[in-house]
Image (tube, rainbow over all chains, first blue to last red; front, side, top):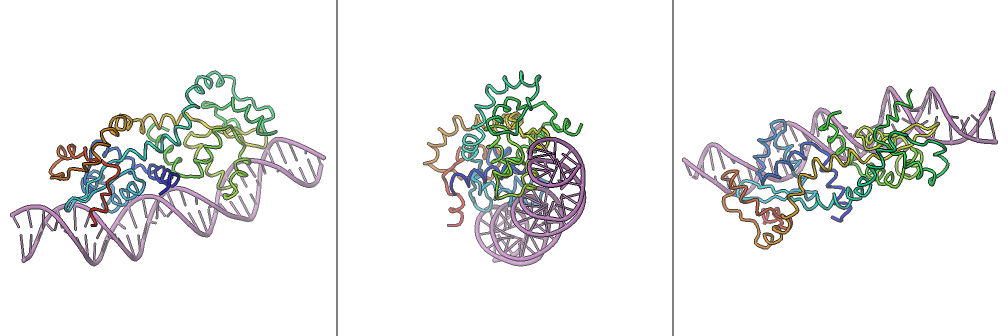
Length: 140
Length: 140
DNA sequence: CATTCATGTGACAAAAATATCACATGTCCC
DNA sequence: GGGACATGTGATATTTTTGTCACATGAATG
């Protein structure tokens, strides 16, 4: 599995709340599949196993058969890689952007002629805003 | 939307590669919906709009109707919050664990009696391993 | 003003994800 | 050795997600 596919698998795996919950549990220490099943009374054991399979396919969980039980270990490396290679790309944005963003928030976006080209759009990037209820204004 | 629901929405939104790609594009600057549609020749405009809807529902994108176009802005705040509240919980794990992990990797896990209880399992947590092909050993 | 452009929406279709189960294998323990 | 225990697997069902489209509204432009 190459890096792009691995990263895709990681993000897909993280997209399900039950799987995130299992990773949370495994963060505290390895667990047998049966223990994880017991900890999820809302899911059948088959569903749990399937979710663990997804996590394992993504490399986020490593398992080892020990007698008749299977022990599941959390593997934080792919998670770290995914965070670093993708989410980390946004870190330079929010380091100083949020400070700048706060001041721009009050003035609102500058919508003059934004459709005239990409360069102009980049100027309008200063209007990137968290609090502006943009959609409500379009419906108002 | 409360924090848990927001976080769930963020991770679900990130689970689709097309949506991650759109966020990547918006990182460089705001784009009209039409521009995003053109940048995704493999998707219909309806699909693009639907994906943007998911991103907007998760708070990762903020849009503003400007005349007959809609301008989409990246909003990094929910992403940062999700990373910090969830993924950040793993940072203390991989800071020193990886150094420790490297030395443990050669000795392999210590599978003696891991099913006897959670305390024992915590001991076996030392065997948490990235490189061990645990599944292949169970089939061998 | 008429036409073009850009997007919106509800309905529907297809694909993917999630969940369940009958039957099965292998290990543990009394 | 037999029964209990733990998990595995292929098949199937259900739900959710992703994708498409006919029809529509509103803004821009010549």
